[in-house]
Length: 149
Image (tube, one colour):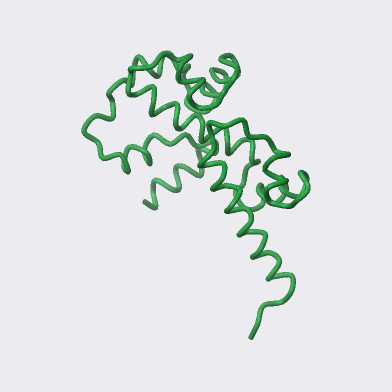
């Protein structure tokens, strides 16, 4: 039995959203904006935004910022870059916006995180460190994920 037209379209939209997410993952340090992502997906900005949120539970911008903060956390744990250098390395052009978003997601400012977590991941396999330190907006979902994993 074949798929209905609506189901087939839904699966195509999910595949497109995966490509958008993969592009964000690859190009997080580049100046990405919603218009460029929508153009690359051959969708309107509104449709891309709605579909991305439907599939991933957050807007493309929120996903991009989470990826940037995740990478910033890794760079700050290394301890060899200043907060400003990390901010620029992850594609943020405003130190103030970067610090505000970092504090929202992680719970402490980047300078405090750098001071308290420098070399904290030493000896932990990178795949495990990535899972444990990943910033998650929805803390309730993170708690459920940690219980399952």
